[in-house]
Image (cartoon, rainbow, N blue to C red):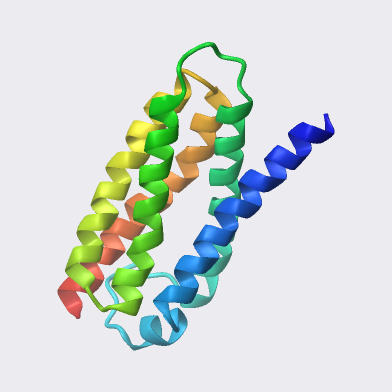
Length: 155
């Protein structure tokens, strides 16, 4: 039981750290965001960090549920898809805020959206809970992709 708890903790903290590292390498995200021309329905910058903290916890929980699942199905594809979406997530902020590569980052966001959909489909066969954990992430990335392209157009 204690081993499962530490696995859960490692998954959540690991994903949170990856998200924090991405933000660190991206530079002063709030300052860059404040200076951008924003599209309709752009959120205030102060809530985005809170949303990502919750989403990263759900992403880590999803990883734990896949790892912990007793489903005999081969999990290799799930791990690959998880790694792909996490890598795309990691580089988006660095490209968008750190490098001002708005268009490249927007297409990365679109690829991230597809990788999340494929992850949900793959997770569903291993852990329905893991698939459910990715639904808020998909909703947010749908919105974030709209914002990304909107910001690219306006800036």
